[in-house]
Amino acid sequence: MKRKNPAPASALRPLLLAAAASFCLLFLCANVAPLYARASRMPVLGPVVRVLRVGSGGERTDGVHAAAQTEGETVYLRFERSSEETDAAPVYTVSHLLSPNRLVLTLRGVRSLDFQGVRESLLGAEAVEDVYRAMIGDDSMVGLVIVLRGGYTCEVTERTAPASLSLRFLAPAEPLSEESVYYLRSEAIPYGEELGMLTERFAADGATQLKTRQGTYLIAIGQYGTQAEAEEALAALEEQHGGETGLYVSSGRSDEIPER
Image (tube, rainbow, N blue to C red; front, side, top):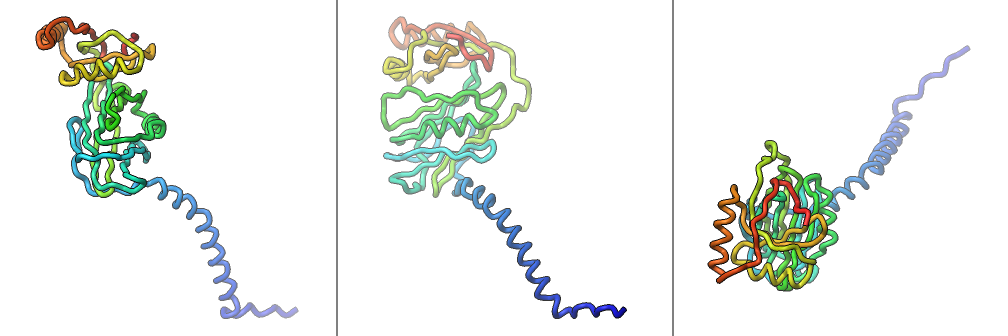
């Protein structure tokens, strides 16, 4: 029985090319959609202006809208005006406080904020335990209190063109101290206008707002290593304000949220 001669290479070439094209098409279909989906989530980053953990920056703005975008353990706050990117971040301040471990971020010149989106983005980071908005009477200011899990810190990077602040959360480098932190505080009250007025009264003294486990709010001032230092600070504050302030000395562990 005669064996058939194998097909010449020229006859096989179209078949091989078709098979290769089919493989490439399958590969692209399997990977292009995820790549585009990932690219759509990646924020456009401009040049770095400064990097800090505590401090201030930005430029004077007005009518800016703020929203959030997440990539891994970094949360990006993006700023725009009239649905268009703006070149400079608004004036901001960053404070890191204890009892509990928290970041206080204040933005000036911001007229609107997608708070729900910002909150969901921040809570998606392993470092973040809670996020709430500070009561501020000025409608061009936004205050965010970001409660961090024990020992975490945050690095803030300011970028321009387009404007953004990126919050990168850093895992604890060493165990959190169990020593008590002392501070001055008010009685707890509901979230509302009274809280904003109380904060404004002691704004020059560094007052920040703090939510209790019961869901009420208080103002806290200062961080002291001993009760004696805190009592001395309270006496100086009362003298400065001309008498009774309604504040008193309290304390807690570095990561402890007051019960009420």
